[in-house]
Length: 89
Image: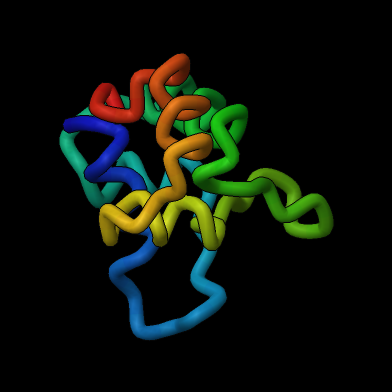
């Protein structure tokens, strides 16, 4: 399981605005909820996903996250994301 798997899970749904809490993400993947929570914090800090405040713990992929999956980042975005290791991402 990598951060890329989490991004693909959040991006791979029919709903354009799909969001899920870490527990739901973990149920659909192999790792524990704790592992997912740790990775979600990193992905959120990197700006690849964002927390929905009004839903209390639900996350959705951002435009930057989608561009990351599509390999369509600007050079400065790529450089900034290296500090977060998005291949862990």
